[in-house]
Length: 256
Image (cartoon, rainbow, N blue to C red; front, side, top):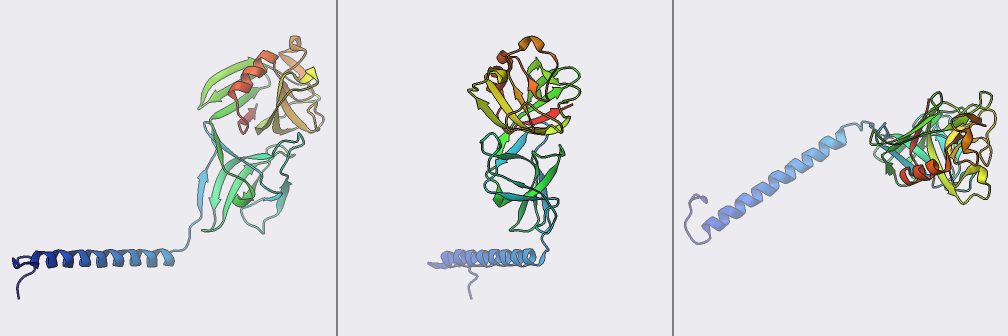
C-alpha cells in the first residue's frame, strides 16, 4: 500500500490532508472531553476579589428590600434590611467592598452599611443590588485640621477648610460613603448643594431626615473653619459648588 504522505496519485495528498484533519479533530475532542471530566471532578473553590481600595471604588443601587447578613451564607444572622430609597427620597445605594463567589451560581457582595454603629458592614446577595459602578475619587475629612481633601486616583484634586461638629455633637470618625446629592434647597442654611453620607450621628444631627451626617454649604461662611455644626461637614458655598463638579455619588469618605 502506498504511504498516504508520499502518494502522488490524484487525490492521494488530499486524502492525506483529510486524514490529518480528522486526526487533529479527534485529538481536540479528546482534550476537551478530558478537561470537562477534570473540571467536573474538581471541587469548586470560593473566589474572592477586592472591589474597593484607596484609588478605586465600586457601588451599586439597592434593587429590592434586601437582607444583609453577617457572613456570606443564607443561614447567617441578619445585620439589617436595606430599603430601596433613602430618607432623602433618593435611590438607596451601597459601597461594595469585596466580592465572594461561594458556588458557581451564588455570588455575595461585602458592603458598607448606612446604619449604627458606624463602620458596620455585611454581606448581600448579588441579585439584590444592581450593576457595579466605578468611581476613582475618595473624600477625606480631617476633623482636627478642619480640612477636606478630595483625591482622584490617589492624587489630590481639591482641598478646602470646613466646619465640623461641636464636641457634644461630634462628626463621627470612620469609613463611610456618599449616598446622594441634593440641590435646590429652599432653606439657605444648607447652601446650594448637599451630599448625604452613610455616616450616622449617635446623638443629634442637623441633616434632613434625622440621624445622617451631610456635607453641605452654609449661609454662615464666617464660622468656617471651626467646631460649628451638629455633626455635619460644612463648606463655604463656592467650595461646595466646586466639590459638586468633581465628586460623584458612591465616593468613599474617610473621617479622621
